Image (cartoon, rainbow, N blue to C red):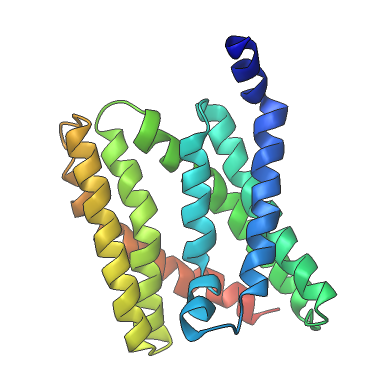
Length: 212
């Protein structure tokens, strides 16, 4: 009976439905928490929040292909949940449709990558696990650079840098204890990836959002 129950829970339809449901709730929650406290405002009005949870979802899915598809679906669902809540809250302005489209496209690009990264850190083999860990942490570090260099929110940037450094440390230790030979690649590649993420956000995403 336990084997049958486990197999049903692992079916693609069940996994993707659960991922989509979680994405919708995450999007709804991030909108609902806006303006409650300064800390929650920044934590929820952040690309890192959506992306990190997408990596977590990928880590919880057993099949690699499902993790990749689940990452894309979750990001789309999160966008859907957020902008549905925005519409019901009567804050979906004239540029809302364009912004939703940009974030959806960004989610389709980043969601599969983060779903893969979460899956690989937990279930993968070899040094690619360390690379996947760096992919996850680079998001937080890149957003820290964006907050400081682009928006000049230096206090919040320091917090994001600290969180990114802590996350990098924890993942590096986890990979070392898991027996990954070049576990240190996570710590080395994370800041490099963070810079690349910042440049992409500045040069591509910000330009697209500014045009809608």
